[in-house]
Amino acid sequence: MKRILPLAFALALSAPAFAQAVDNQGAKQLSDNLARYFGKQAFDKGVLKVSVEGDAYKIALDVKALVNALPEQKLLKFDMAPYALIVKPRSDGSWDVSSNFSQGASLEFDGPEGRQSMEFTIKDGKLTSVYDPALAAFTNATSSLAGMTMTSREAKQQADVSTGAGTATVAATKSANGGVDFTATQKVSDFVERIKVDDPDSGMNFPLTLKTPELSVDANGKGVRTKPLLDLLAFAVANEDEARLKANQAELKSLMLAALPVWERVDGNYRFKDFEVDSPVGKFGAAQFSTAFGMDGVSQNGKVDYTIKATGLTIPHQTLPEWTVPLLPTEIDLNFGGANIDLDTMAKRAIEAFDLNKNPPLSDEFGKALVADFKAKNPKVVIAHSTVKNADIEVAMEGEMTFPGEKPDATVTVDVAGYDKIVDALKEGAKSDEQMAQAFPFALAVKGFGKTLPDGRLEWVIDTKADGSVAVNGAMLKGPDAAQDDSAGQDDNSGDDGANGTDDSTGGDDSDGGDNGGAGAKLQP
Image (cartoon, rainbow, N blue to C red; front, side):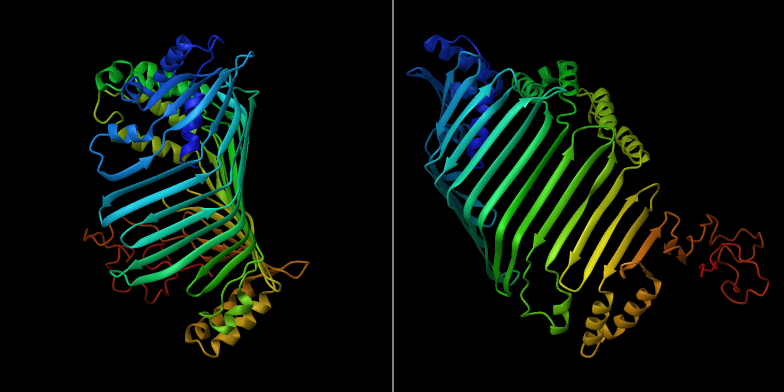
């Protein structure tokens, strides 16, 4: 389904509105419109075909014909029925788009490590939707399926995937600032993936099963530039010839600029309910597990955000020392990403500067200058408030990092509830584990640097600077790195005092009280 539906949507997206009459002349006009985005050869070779189907048009995609048209394709076997969309013009200029995407396919080929194969089936797949050419988007779409299976076989790995019933929806409206705002949802029941790895070379031989009774996906976007992106696709099809592309690169640049910022913002979230992973070492699980991603479009102050959340975590204890059990988390909430990301300046400068008549179109010097300018805008790596916890312990962290030079500036705040529980566990581990016995005094020392908050939590504010200094809660643990002397190690007969590393007394008796910041410089207390 993931492979077929996007292509079907792209076909429908490519069809502009035209006269309402459904006849052979209309079918030819629709074919010509589609050829703008997929090329005339797609019709000449039978990959795409438009025909009249009652009061609608049938757009058929023959994937087998597409595969046969590919140069140097080495498939030993490929079977897949043609895929079809039924499109019907509406009185308001939009289109009804529907499909039965029940499908089955199989392929087989010789890969680098031997014979490989894949097959899938989609049961009772149905799509109904309305497409608006003025927006170049579906104003609404609903699809469903009764189930899906997929199997793949390789020399050292095999996988079997199955799902139960699933549904999906899409809705779009005109964005206030141009482009399209959209929302999309998908829900699939009874997802199961079984993987078996058997690799004699590495000694890996194990089965793995991932399953969830419910997998759901939510996505939304603002200001997606659907029409300019379609214009770029049409330009690519019309300028496949290299000489023509070079001659028309001014138009290409104009179209690329028109497509910016591509989108204002897109966000997506995958959620797994009662997620389980069965492995040879035991069962991992989470009552709720989710991953989220969000990204601004090409802007001067963009943000990227990632989130990983899990509740009701279970981790097998069989292979872990007993003393580690009190430290195992049952809940995680991790939030990180980037901020102050200036892709707008980079993109516009690159579009303006590239020249397809040169090799490379952008010089190495230009690329280096572009990266340097990007860094000069001071982009940040951000850790938003994140926690890892169980019933007795909670570790929280937040901070940010910038790169003013070769080394980063970073400020990170860590606070812990139940630190004594951590110390108790390490103390127990020290009885039987030599490494823990060495780490235990360090855990006590770390506690000494902590600041006790009103609620009893311990807090450490850690500041590291590009000059190499490190401070915790305002106390300097390490001073700036020693200044580098370019003449270090050279015999220039200048009679220096040892800062260049030639004086035997360096690092020895400093009774003269003079620390010149050279190789013998001391760390701050």
